[in-house]
Image (cartoon, rainbow, N blue to C red):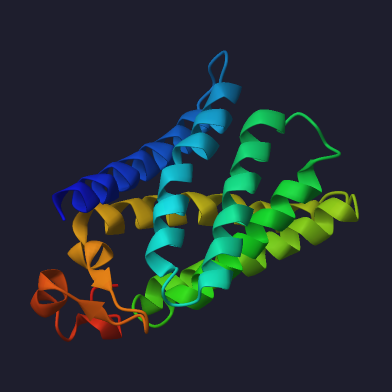
Amino acid sequence: MRLKRDVRVIAGSLAIASGVAYFAYLLPFEGRDRAITAWNLLIIPAIVYLGGWLASRAPVVASASTAAGVTASLLWALAFRSPTLEPWWIGLAAAGWLGFGWLLLREYRALGRFTLVLGVATIIDLVVTVMNASMPLYLLGAFKLPLTTAWTLWIGLTLVRDSRWSAERSLDGDHVGADAVANVGLGSGAGD
């Protein structure tokens, strides 16, 4: 159980560092493109942890969301200068967030809703990107960026602080074990 907690806290801490890396990208300094790479690579452990944690709820959706999120992050981190790949990482990110948002609604209602809003904002970004829209329409896609940063920080803080994430799950998705007993009544989204 301690190993699971340590992995959860490390994944959450890296997600927080990911959010900080995005803020670093906004600062005018040479080599700031490395912040985009860091932002996207540092969130991957949280995506993988989230997918594993949600797998008992809906294994196919959790696995697809995890694969989409990891692939989107890798593409964005390593190929952000390639405009031909941009629709791919945006579309994969949208799929990942929509899947995770749907799965989070039961226990983390506010985080689930926010994740769904982020998924919809990412679909809008995908549409304006594929259309190769000009300003000011292109700005509609920019709403995704602050939402992504907020989600990254939120998921990081939630993983670090909330012990529900490390509770064992039965096949039907209900908590079992000491963490679940300690958190009776919190499954309705109270902690969001």
